[in-house]
Image (cartoon, rainbow, N blue to C red; front, top):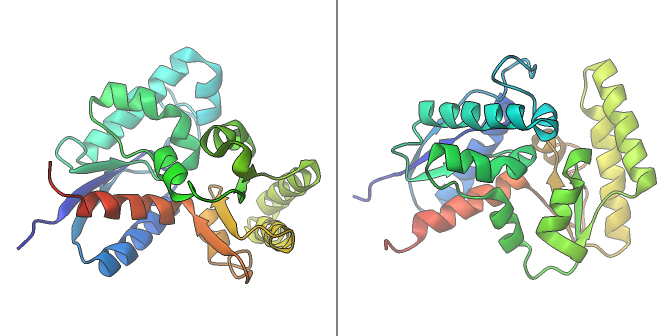
Length: 238
């Protein structure tokens, strides 16, 4: 009997991200016929998504080198607590952590299966891909996809921002999902056939009205990271 591949997941913004990754992983494992064990850390920085000493928010870490180092150490510690030292694969199912992979990997002293690499490989043959992302991730999206990425224009970005604020007021994802559905339809009508939901709320959006838009292939970064894990799981042993 083949030993299950062990996976450690860490660095995600919330518990829903881990749950969505686990759901996507279960689907690809079932289709590919491999088994796995999965350990995941708690949300980073915490369940309340509030900055505390030694666990700064991502935005803070981007602006301050000391806090960046604190983030590296905190996520690496979370990874070790989630079995990273003995896992076959280590993953970070979070778009907003992509820019911190190098530093976390250095502190951890172990390789991480890169989400950015998985995204680039998945869409390597696609000349135009629509990417609905969080505002701070725009430069990272350009670095991954280059000129192939179609991202929200100024009007669309403004609508997303207004929807985010309305969603906070209502404590609902519905306003953002509605704008994402509108954008998806617009890009589909413009001839774009592949759309990536690269936002922290991708799980809800993909399973809601935005993900129900027909005539276009919609994936979240959780789908693609799970596929990358499956490819590694089935790769011949070195």
